[in-house]
Length: 343
Picture 1 (cartoon, helix red, strand yellow):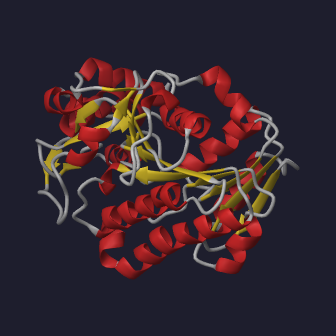
Picture 2 (cartoon, one colour):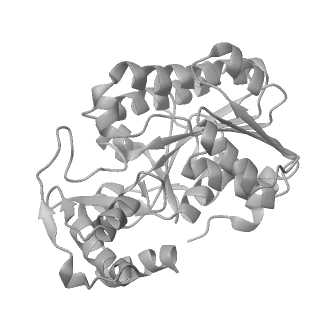
C-alpha cells in the first residue's frame, strides 16, 4: 500500500528538515526519502556517535546532510538544531519495553522531556510542522514505555488547543515495523542463525505489523494533511507471532544451512507488562476517529474538527466492528511480507 506517494515528494522538496533519532531505522529511512525528494537540507540529530558516522560514510559526506550529535534532553542543543527548520520529524525515544521498565527516569526524561523541548523550541523558531512518531504501546499502557509515549502524544496534540503559534503539531502511531533495528525480525533471525530455539512468549500472541515503506508513507501523508493535534494510524495487518515465526523458519533457515524442522520453538511465558494483543486505538478514540481507506485519524480530545478538512475522510459507525472482527492474515500473506525484506 502506498499513500499519496506522488504528492509526498513535494512535501519534502526544498525544505530544511530536522530528524531527531535520525540514526534509527525510521530516521534513516526518512533521511533517504528526503534526499530522493530533493530536500534543501537534512539535519540528522542523534546521540548515537557510531550511527552518525555510518550514515556519513553511507552518503559520502553529502553536503545536504548535517550530522549532529547531542541529547534531546539538552535545551541548549535542541534550541540550536531547530533554527531555520521547516519540518521536524521527531523519532528520538527510548523504545525497548524492558529497558524502560528498569530505567523509568531515563524513559521519562527522553520520551517526555525530550518531546517537550522539541515542542518549545519549534514554537520559538516558527517551524512549519512537527510530526512526532508514537507507538501502539501508548494505547491503554501498562508499562513505563507505553505510558511515556502516551504522555508524549498528549504534549504534542495539546498544542492544537492552546495554539501558541502557527506551528502544526501531529503524531503518527505505529504498530510493529518489520525492518527496524531491535525489532522481532532481526531477533528471530539471530536465533535461527545460532540453531535455535526460537523463543515465543505465548502461542496466542498477536501484533499489528507494517513495512518500513508503509511507515515512511504514513509519516509523509500525515505531514501533508495535518491540521494540528491529530494522531494518524495506518490500517495494518494483524499477525499471529507463531505464524510469523514459522514463516521465518521457511524463509531464513536455508540462508544459514538449516531446515525449518531443525529449528524448534520454545514457549517462555509472557513478560511482565506484556499484552496478548496491542490495539491501535483505545475505546474513546474508536468512537470519535475519522477513517479513510488507508488510515484512521484520531482527532484532538479538546475539540472535534469537521471531517471535510481531511481528504476522503469520514466518520463511520463500524470502526469498533473493524477491530472486533479483524482476523490475523494467513501464512501465505506473511511470507510475501518476509520475502519483501529478504529479497
